[in-house]
Image (cartoon, rainbow, N blue to C red; front, side, top):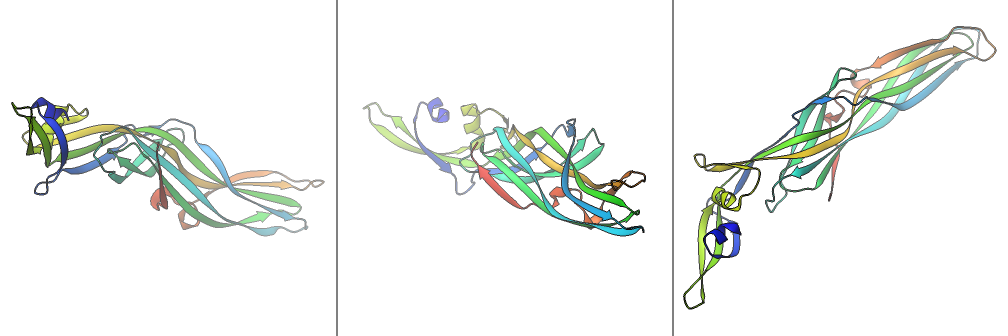
Length: 268
């Protein structure tokens, strides 16, 4: 350890002080640029067809039922090793410029390791819509999700304070060594080691760390039903095309990341 070397000692071991232990607090992660310029995707989640082969109009019902899973993955690019994995769950609003919609995402941030954290959000959807189908016509309903993909940089922050205990050895004139156990403030160690990313505050007796990471994934923005009503082969008639927005509890509520399902962790 450079702190021990700077005192011309031989480093032995170190650990946190029981009286005033080393603390990592104020863990925060944010997305400084929330604007997404990538075009959105349209994902077909379900499809239904109603065929009217009679000479009378038919009141048909489109019934949709399925599930959709969104995913967001975060990773630390510039962090600090703290001997333990410390993560926090955060939320951020992204603005998808192409469609003028905002989506709220959940993600995990960690300043202490380079593992990749993946949050999956699975949500069921169910909806029914009544459609009037003219005689000898077919109605097709396509349940579509407007999905926004994103990849953004995150800013990671935390505050470090407390004391550590360092055990090192000092050489004596007879070439033997004497053991020295010393209590040191973590900010003195960080300063002596020249650990990058830290801003030392002697007045507050703490150090502020700033690092960065990445976050990527996709989020459901809005859902709608594309309806096409067209005459059956061999029959005259007009083709109609329109959209039915899906809102409320029957559809994929916005934001889709309100309910986080499970987390998997894997090494980078």
